[in-house]
Each structure stands twice: as structure tokens, then as C-alpha cells.
Amino acid sequence: MARVLVIGAGGVATVACHKIAQNPDVFTDVMIASRTKAKCDKIVEAIGNPNIKTAQVDADSVDELVKLFNDFKPELVVNLALPYQDLTIMDACLACGVNYLDTANYEPKDEAHFEYSWQWAYKKRFEDAGLTAILGCGFDPGVSGVYTAYAAKHHFDEITHLDIVDCNAGNHHKAFATNFNPEINIREITQKGLYYKDGEWIETDPLSVHQPITYPNIGPRESYLMHHEELESLVKNYPTIKQARFWMTFGQQYLTYLDVIQNIGMSRIDEMEYEAPLADGSGKNVKVKIVPLQFLKTVLPNPQDLGENYEGETSIGCRIRGIKDGKERTYYVYNNCSHQEAYKETGMQGVSYTTGVPAMIGAMMFFKGLWKRPGVWNVEEFDPDPFMEQLNKQGLPWHEVFDGDLEL
Ligand code: NDP
Image (cartoon, rainbow, N blue to C red):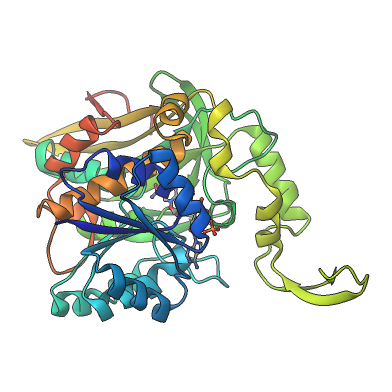
């Protein structure tokens, strides 16, 4: 019996649930629960397996979560809602004796700031309860950490430089759209950049450091240095790292729109008073509070609807420099994922696919007993080999380049 509860019914959850359904030998009982039950039902309909249960839950409420966990009795909760819900779900897991996995670290709603300290603070409680929590098990964070662990295990005595390079060379034919939740995405991109060098964190102005990087099968793309959460855990878990950076590609049109959004105040996350017409048709107005970025999300294209016309591919990997047998060497490990292939298989585009597949593999690692250890862990703290093997089997094959030019 392997009972898994997926929370959230967005793009990433849709892919993870398709993949869970493709592996019935591992996952015997499945429930999808989210804020809007109709979206969970839609996923079940698309998968075509009526045995998958669905439920409504507000994951901001520990009480509602506890009730749901006590009803369904999952062994593992896969949190694919938003980073805001991480702590309430972890609290409910502790209250009910349930294991935990997510793909993004906690962020408070009123502050665009992410770091692991909030979730790492749960380590002792998960340890004492004999429960496993696996943090950041998407692609980046997620596969990026597993790639690094694999490189450290098989190809290096010491890793000194790590560059995570994330390219989306797809075209969705929309003027402006984000590839995952717009609110979380825009909060992330408009933050200051941050990278690690010689034991210190160095801050840069948002998207101010950039250079072209050549991606396999894609070619050169302008890539921007950003802060990304896995850097925090990777430099802690691999203390030989002298420099760690994260790069992501953006097209000029995307950046121009982003500039406008910021300049006109639509990326603000503070509450504003707005006079809105009452829904009763009386013609009267009422004062309501709105958060501009949350309002913007309601008018932007839904990332889940981008798949059908999405062409091109993503390319995400780790470019690593270090020492093996006394000599310097470089290593590049990456995956390219086609948006159209992802859409044909799951109805979702490549960014949801590259996140949802590793979330399922992490859950599989847990149920196979391979990634099961009381405490709170980042993915690179587990054995990378069985995970790497599954990436090849589950739709995200990886490739290696030894001693090539890293460009960075
Ligand atoms: P979506 O916005 O498409 O989906 C989020 C889902 O969570 C929606 O179904 C939403 O419900 C639900 N939800 C939101 N709030 C609550 C709540 N309070 N209670 C219950 N359900 C709730 O996002 P994505 O699928 O694109 O992303 C999911 C997660 O994956 C995010 O945390 C994102 O940061 C992470 N991610 C990680 C990546 C990685 O590589 N590690 C890459 C991309 C994303 P409703 O539909 O009703 O709004």
C-alpha cells in the first residue's frame, strides 16, 4: 500500500499526477486535493482513472489539512500548491504522522523573500516524529541538486565551481506569459540577484549581470544571473564550492513587458484600496483591498493553457568545475525537454513537465524506501543514482559532456 496525497491542481500537479498514474506498481492509492475541487476532477478525467480520489482543501488552514489527512490517511503528501502553503502543510504532516515532499521553498505572502531557514527549522521535529521531509524536488531546485550530487559522487573529488544554467527556448506565441504561477514567477525574477563566492553572498541589481551562454541544440541565448534557492543548500552541502551561480534566459520582449509591469506598479505585493462595483448589480460601489500582482495574475494567460501552441524546448543543466585525481576537470550534465512532447503526453507545457516528473520520482524514491530518513532534507543529501536512473525512464533523459568549454 502506497497512499499518496497531491495538494494543488495546477500545471505541475497535473503532470505529477499523470506520471503517478503511469506508475501503478509504486503508487497504489492516490488523492488530489486543492482549493478548487473541479480542477482536481478535471485532472482525473484527463488521466482517465476514476480510482483517483479528489477533495477540496484550503491548504492555508492546518485544521482543514489535518481533517483531510485523517480521512485519507496518506503516507506521503506531495505539496504542489504554492510556496505560501509549505509551513501549514508541514505542520499538518507533523500533527498526523505524514511524510512530506515539495518543489519550492517557503515564502511569506507579504515579503518577496525565499530561503530555507523556515523549513530547515522543522528538522528536529521531523526527526523526532520519525518522518521524512524532502525539500525542493522539481527541476531547479530538484534535478539541479541531484545532478550536483551525481557529479560529486562519480566525477569529482572536489567541486569548486557550480553554474546552474536554465534556458527556455520555447515560443508560446503570446505577447507576455509566465511559464508557472505568474505571481510566484514575477516575485522571483524582480528580486535582486545573489551568488556565492569565496564564502560570501554577493548581491547584484535585478537582472543586471548577463552574458550569452550556448545551449545544446538551441545555440547562444542571453542568460541572466539570478538568485535561486538551491544555491543555499548546495554550498552548505558541498563546502568545497568556491563559486555558485544560477543563470536563466529571458527574451528581450519578455524583459520589456516586465519593465513596464514594474514601472506601472503592477508587480507590487502590498494591499491597495480599490473601489469595486457590488456584485448584486445595485450599481453601488464597495471599497476592497487588492494586491496588484495578484490582480495581474487574473488577467495574464494561464500557464496551463500555453501547451497547445508551445514550440521549442527547454535546456537545464549544471556546469561544474573541480578536481579529480589531482587534475582540474569540467563536467556538464543537462536535459532538453520539448514543449510539444510534454503537451502530447500530459496536456501541459515543458516547464510544468520538467517540474512534475521529478516530483513524482522523488515520491517514488520515498515509497521504494530509497529516500526515506527521518528529518528535513534537500534532494542532494540522498543517493542520486536511483533518481538519475528514473529520469531516463520517466521522460527527462540526461546527457553528459566531459572536459568541454563551460563558457563561464
Ligand atoms: P499553479 O498556480 O498552476 O498551481 C498552484 C495550485 O495550487 C492551484 O491549483 C491552486 O488552486 C492551488 N492552491 C493555491 N493556494 C491554495 C490553497 N491555499 N489551498 C489549496 N490549494 C491551493 O502553479 P504551478 O503548478 O505552476 O506551480 C506549483 C508549484 O511548483 C509552485 O510552488 C511553484 O513555485 C513550483 N515550481 C517549482 C519549480 C521547480 O523546478 N522546482 C518550477 C516551477 C514551479 P487554484 O487552482 O484554485 O488557484
